[in-house]
Image (cartoon, rainbow, N blue to C red; front, side, top):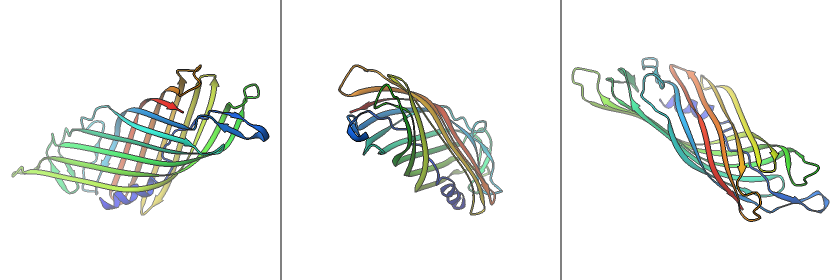
Length: 279
């Protein structure tokens, strides 16, 4: 299982998903800009389905996370704080936690232990992201100075991740004693990313991101992709004080690796929603 953990760490040193930051400013002399809203705080939710499969060692059972476990959709909440540093850069801090639990519908071997059907399996992942965003290019509206018709940002950050996989139930043997097996790992992950966005009307923004990497490390083939597309609508366009928005979208994340008898494909996907204030 340690080999699997190391392969996951190697596979996840990749773009990992902070959302594009919006700008609110007016131009000054000599082409500089003055930001009049520099901090955003968002409470966000993600209704995610868990899919994929996991197998530890060649002798282990390949567990289909969709058909072999009674996982259901879960809605979990997190937060995001963004602070604009300058015309070109911003900092972002975000947190999200997912946990799914269900009963196995068949006998399985997990971490060299044999479990009867109806054993409980739980998968929990949490991420704390600290990222720096830098504007690569933008196109301004000529008739409305201060608005970005389109922008593209690059990002560098560190994701502090914690992962837990546990199985507990009766032993698949004559003795049929109680068994527990699990894997837990915490690790920091540096990553790169891209965000793109466009303000398509006075009060509506479209934002999206896509990340992809394929590597071979430590005898493992690893593939990862992470994408989302969302729209943000301002709720109080006439106010000159705190700006309020609703944010709706969709996100999908996939981790896929295989090597040395271990195999893991874990996918989270589903709609996202949030409310945020900028001041």
